[in-house]
Image 1 (cartoon, rainbow, N blue to C red):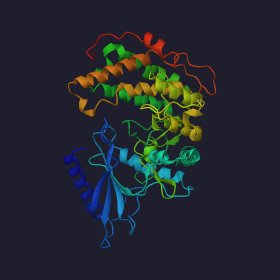
Image 2: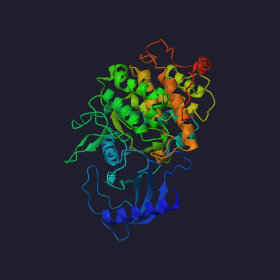
Image 3: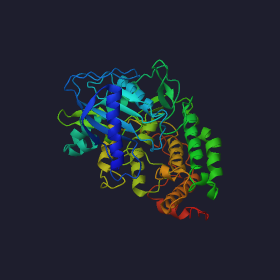
Image 4: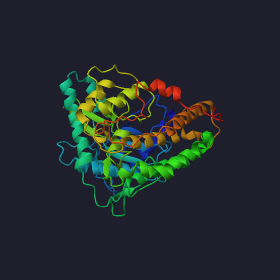
Length: 455
């Protein structure tokens, strides 16, 4: 974030506090910055020290899901939503507030208050979206668990994470006003209702397969906006994608037609859990920006951190990622490999030991087909392509990224996995699924790519 943007954000924070709450800050400091991240930040979070020396009372707010700032509160978080992040600004603020409300309901029997209170919010539909919320003190969970020297202590910490996930997935009774899959929003009476996804501009949906198909459809339409991709009309990839999206998704996902609606955090990695080192317990679960009503396996395929718990796609070619996939599905070896840039093996094994009952690891469903579909969707519009590339002549870097995406799409489309149950319940292995033993053979079999403008 450059200095001009930083000054602009400070101005927004001061204006919102003054105009919307009648309050003034003593100090404003950025937090949760990601230096060197190749993608735009989804949001910018600021810790604000309020000036309450004169006993100022905040103006009351009428939005759903808010409470009045208590008199003794001096520190708050202000979250500003980044309009250049490529997310659905029309509903993302509402989605996050509604998700935090559901999370509180799920954890109503939890011994501590770990979901931040919301003091006010403004939709990003027509301008700068923001949430003013409770300040929660703690360090990222991954940092806390790395400081814990004892194996039993690490396990105890992850058992608490397991309890939270079980509350979200199994114990929460969704309000009857939530009719479908997708994102969350509010009606005119403040009831939580189904809405559009944050990651797409579509929804809600009657069934889970309809949601997955719509996401893929929107991604294909989005690829038309990037000259470097040209809607994948090059290499004859477009017809193959259309055949998959419009004629084959229903067959691949037929066992999901009656899938139960489940509350999904959407970004449940250890960075979004804060740990109180003084009390030795979880202090907060944060960042519900990508929350949705989906299928329980979404957490394992989309939400968990890719270095230790997110299940790699069935046609993964990276050897380290293949090892992780095999370990998550068939069990971890006694002697763990050393940590690498791709996999944090110690945390992965601990996570599996304590949270192996979640998502894909016990789901008797066509997991490989769904994982394959999501990997296709990720490459239709690669995350590495900036929104700045829309409608502009591609740079050499854009061309290289598009070339890699084309190779990945071509490879995956030519090798659809069988739709089988989880290998833990069906001992038949997928012949199309690469393993370390077949990696070299698959590399030799990789189809020759046609010349195109990407090359």
